[in-house]
Length: 300
Image (cartoon, rainbow, N blue to C red; front, side):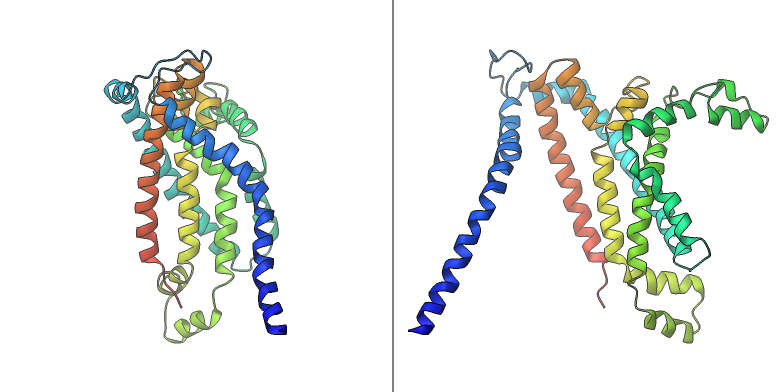
């Protein structure tokens, strides 16, 4: 009899615990699932975001964004932006983490100094760097003048070839501290016995890093790469604040193009179609990347 009651009690409690998940599920359904389903529906209409007297247009929105070339331009800009962020952020972040993990004097100060930009909002950072990049009177132009260059003609944000790289540099500067902290946390979990064994075998410092430390933090590398890829694919802030998508369409990322179509051009249906295609592209890139990164991870 006791066993029966005990068994029935064990079965009842987990069922009751599911009740606590209901509020979260309701919020998730209202603020995520419903908007996503609505997005897919609006992508087949000519809804302008204001007037609900719209028509069903089928795949015309998808055909328009492909024929206009705006989708391809935004995808290429976003992929280039993401590539710059992923490569530069991880290389610099990893290098800083290795230096700070050496136990140098003032490590806490340097770690805090590198991380401070991550605490500021993108709006603040964007406005500050707009003045830094300002032609003729900005800090970058002044430094170029100091070394004998012609800083007054330097317009990084107004040049089609340098605008995207310039705003990517600002994004890297802001978030490099987060990447560094994650790498530093991974390095501090490395078992020193493996490092000592490598030193006994006569490994150089570079060999210790390449063949022991990097494989041991492969999971940390995957985390940072994924986070940077996500940040690159959803890039919007600095394109909006610093260049407004210009010059021309040089800094039109996927998210900025969607925003412009939906709120500036008032073509919510077309923007929804753009969002659906962007979603498919992002999911495809993420799946390929995760499969590749998981194969590279090493377990000890």
